[in-house]
Image 1: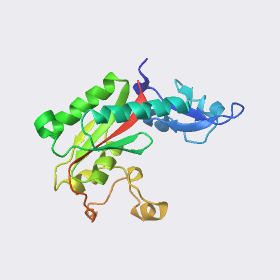
Image 2 (image 1 turned 180 degrees about the vertical axis):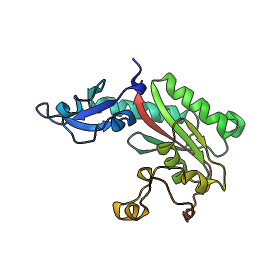
Image 3 (image 1 turned 90 degrees about the vertical axis):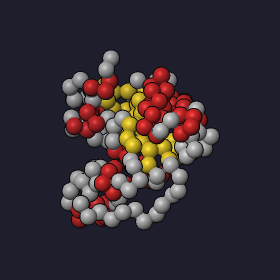
Length: 195
């Protein structure tokens, strides 16, 4: 069953009134929103509804951490579904970042995880790119602003007050460069859904 081509929603809450907790992009495009009831979501043609299983989420996070640890000893479970790792100094073992992230994504797929992977000289940039771009993304030093300018506004960590005046789904051309730098090369991968 090809779930990536169908709307999928995860339900949470009491059995008497489960509500949509999470959903994929196809479900969003079909008009499904977090918080609506199972009965409302079921009105969407071809939707796949699944109950949230916290134990599976923990197992997926553990698998994500194990996968990352194959490529770096410096791994951080950043948040649910997100793992960061420092890949500075790993080129002699795994090759350039482009090759490493392709290998990492392939390794994750073998254990049943569909991931987005990004690498950048700044950890925050890599995390935003992994959240906003599908597949693998390499952001070269000095190209951070141009890359982040392509992201939808809802990917950026902005409050409603900050995002509202922008009035656009993309960052403006003159968006300021990040003022905070973290040294080293970081690779972030984000868990999307089990296959």
